[in-house]
Length: 225
Image (tube, rainbow, N blue to C red; front, top):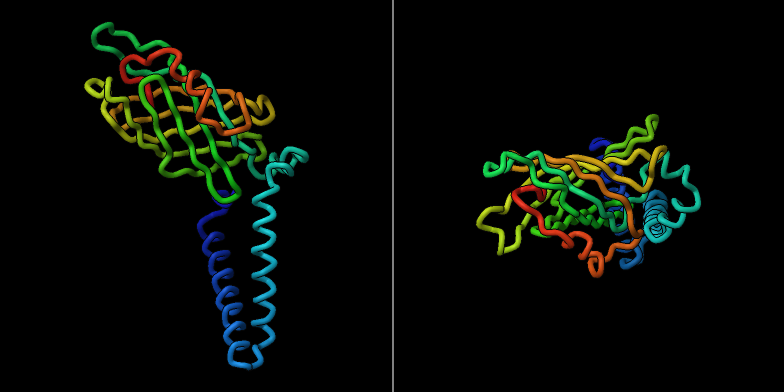
């Protein structure tokens, strides 16, 4: 959820925490030298301890709280953690057939905390991982989107026709219509685009067993993001 804050607010929070931490450390040095620290420094020490404690507890319990109180997800951002499976449809046209490749089975794993998000995607021919993620929320409309840039690595057996590349993608949830579905698009450095449509099959992030979802049918052409 940290990404939902503007950079100005992030800078303000980081600066305030840095000052509080510096004063808290200062208190320790006062103690070591047998001197009495200023009252404000003591306040900073207790504030730092409380902040760290609250942040730790929140990191461990936020998913449980989100599950029990769905209204919080609606007001902040949904829990996207889990394994998502569906299809990827490319707009690329195969010169040999003058047609787009058929829908490609795809599996996506999303790991989300209060402070970070990472995304892995796999098809039958390649895998990709996010290099940067950005959250976007439209609370009034009930629409929540995660933007991410990624690095794609094809398998060696298809490298001759599917080069390694970078791209940008977004996945969006309409929490009022279907909170189990993510739909979006991708854009690659190879000048190809496509649509992604997946549903959550598990709230756990597991790379074993679910691999068969994406590899059940080999991809053709350059459909994989």
